[in-house]
Length: 236
View (cartoon, one colour):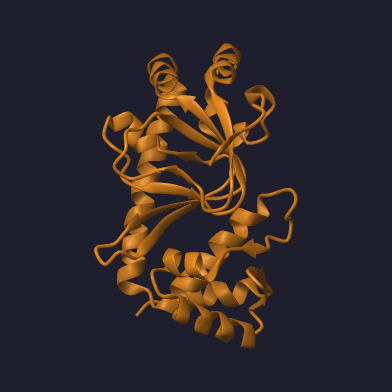
């Protein structure tokens, strides 16, 4: 069950400068702080589910969140890992449709929720906010096309290397984790790459033997970024 958390001040949020809210005026930022709520989620807890109605715009204050869908065979497929400063549910909120994906905490996290009407009002009143909101939507579409191409043409080892590099950069953004140590279950990593747990374990073992990575329980440390980059660029 989510727990209501102390509400961070938007005006002094370190993630705001890299987010859509960077384009808000001071009075708009004050309004965001006034109407938003903030909750903490334990690892595995659900923020929202596919098929439900959007209630607002989620903004990650701390921790990591996975966005996922279920395939026809019932397997979970992670489509994106979101980090502090990232927004969730923005496409469904604007389209007026249901959530097309689900979101759950990949680790303990704190997430703010700005009510839907506040975002719609801001979209109409602030042209720069609206412009960059649209850019965010376009970038999301481009990323989905790239991921589809990778799943179709990039071998599993390449997808695994790419996923580790993306996760490394995401975790490195945390001030408390400057080395970018990746903390993720093998099941979640398999879901992100589009494979099964057994294959994930085998490929990680191969990468360890090459000294590209080292592991400790669920932690993965990157030892050779250049080596992983070379593998990630290979296509069938």
